[in-house]
Image (tube, rainbow, N blue to C red; front, side, top):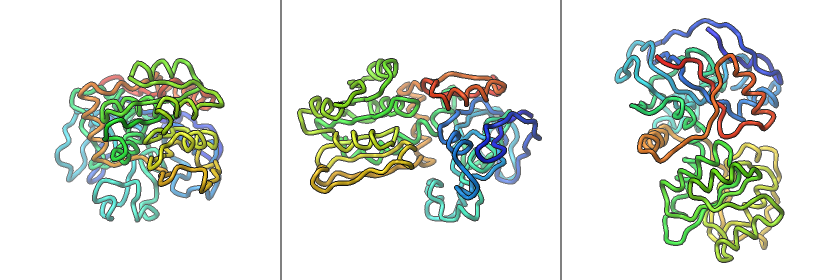
Length: 351
C-alpha cells in the first residue's frame, strides 16, 4: 500500500510502498478515510535532528489526525464493528499508569518504555491506505462524516482541552475570550467557545478571509496591527478578557495575550511556536493573579465529547482535501503557509 513516510531527519516526506498492517491482539486495522496534515508534522521532518526526541525518530508513516472504517479486528477486541466509522485518539501510552487510566495518554508516565508518542508520532500513522491502532483509542462516529471528524483528533481536541480547562473563567455573566490565530485550530476554537459558553468571543488574525469566517461563527474580530491589545481592552470596557487562547505561540502573540488578559484571567499557550519564544515576565506589568499556562492536546473522553458536538451540528471544520498522491503537495503548501483551515489527505473515499 502507499504511505507518506518520514524517512530521515530534516528530510521532506516521501510516498513509498509498504505492507498493509495486520491487527494484533487488542488492535484494529482501519481503512483510512482521512488524515490531517499538521504543523507538528512539519516540526518533526523540518526541525528535528538526532536526539531532539528519540520517541519520534525516523522511520514512520505520518498522520496523527485520523478517521476511517474498521477493516480488521484483532483478537480480544470487543465493541468494534467492521465497516463502522471511527476517529482515532492519537496519543498512545502504556494504558495502566495514573494518566492513561483516565484516558490522558498525553502524560503517560511510561512513555519511554512505550517507545513512541502516538499514532503518526513515532508509530505508523494515518497518511496511508490502512493503519493499525489500539482498539481503546477508537471513538465511534455514527453517521458523522469521517473527513470532518479527522480534524477533531488534534485541530479540534487541542483547543477543546484548553477551553475546557478555562471554563471556570468563562462560565459567568459578562465573560469574554480572545482567540489569537485563526487557522485550523483557531476557527474551531471560536466554534467550541460559541457552543460551550456565553462569553463574548474576540478573534485576531492577519488574514482578512479568516477574520470574516470567524465573524460568521459569532466572533468580534480585530485586524492585525500594533494596537491589537488596546482594541481588545476597548471592546471589553478597559478590563481585558477573562481567557486568552494563543494558537500561534510566538513572542509577539504571547505579548498581545498578556496585554489583553484581565486581572485573575487565564492565558493558554496552545500553539507550538512557544517552543522558540522567550517571554519576559514582569511583576508590575502583568495583571494580578493572571495565569499563564501551556496546554497539550487532550484526553480520550474529551474526543468523545467533541464528536458529540459535531453530531449536534455545532462544529464546521474548515478544510481542503487532497488525494494520497497529492499529499506531498499538501505538506509543501502547509510549509509555505498556503493552507486555509486544515489540509486533509483522503486515501479512500468509501469502505
